[in-house]
Amino acid sequence: QVQLVESGGGLVQAGGSLRLSCAVSGRRFSSYVMGWFRQAPGKEREFVASIRWSGGPRYYADSVKGRFTISRDNAKNTVYLQMNSLNVEDTAVYYCAARVAGSRDYDHWGQGTQVTVSS
Image (cartoon, rainbow, N blue to C red):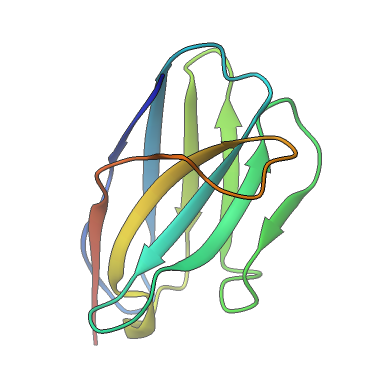
């Protein structure tokens, strides 16, 4: 079983930055793909970014390209989401998730962390 714990959310002004962290523990996850998702009030959950734990290309939603960066620290078993140039539309609960590479569905989720961007 893989456990995911997010941290780093908070309140920030528009134009500011935040870095979210996702601490990963449990079974060996070297073959996993790690993703960040978000869900704003009244909206469906949406994909934000993903990265393969073993390396390789990173993928981003169009709405965050050029502003957000996903990365991982293998030594710390942590995945990060650096968020720059935040705007009010980025306000949401952000979730860390994991899936086995080659699988379509993410089957491990964290509890979420709130990000609020004020104008």
